[in-house]
Length: 327
Image 1 (cartoon, rainbow, N blue to C red):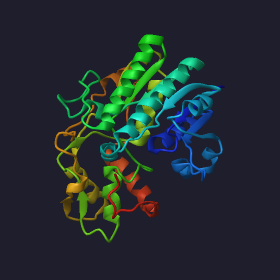
Image 2: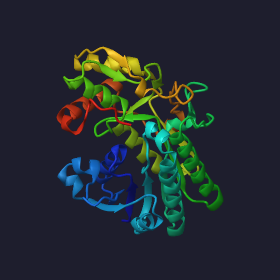
Image 3: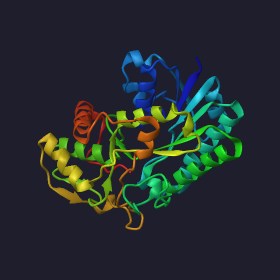
Image 4: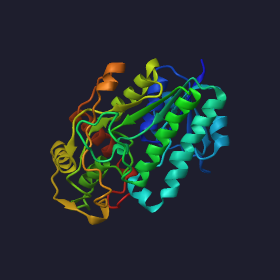
């Protein structure tokens, strides 16, 4: 049985995807960003019986040679490697172009040269910009309201061009906001939970409170990735993954406080706010195409997913720096 390559395997969603693929009996190559200390990120948090089944490959998604070499012997690629922090994309747009656009080119071109049978490219709901209608389906206009989202639009278009130009079997997975254990401290839910748990934080310091997001627990997002990969008639298509429910950041903070039975005043900190014209005010997923093509159904609602996430962060609180703003 040929192997599956997962790029971005040390990241949040990537580590959960690797874990689930191993559980399903697949042989997995985990492509992680090279570093001299052999630190493998979230993969190091996996259970030993899962971890021992993974072949870890260090490289750089921006480097065609390391990408091509990692792909050798694989029949399928899940491409998740990306720079994802929106605030840092204001600092270094070029870093996002090099990672998200050039990195995706490397995956597509190496896949074409090696006749890879199935290529799954990871997009984002940020490509839609703030909703022009609700719920957002796959035909919604694409608006690059941040350098990050602009690079993801470009990567998606590049993937589509490889399908149309070369017949490459590409599928574009477009998750809305995913949350759960192992998520980066820069994301809103870990930010809220860690500040609530840190006694030195007298208030919750957050960015804009009015935007809404459609939140999917990470295991359900991964379930969607795998379901899309297994459907033959998805080639050339972009498919949303989301719950078709929205919640404002203010209401989300209140819900987490209620679950944790901890109350702190909410303070808007200007440093954390996006520029008004760059803020995506509303996201809510139309998931009808996903359900129609795959029969996907989520196993977690917001409350059960948040409880799992809170339990993980409580157990791993030493990994977080709640008093710092992470861009």
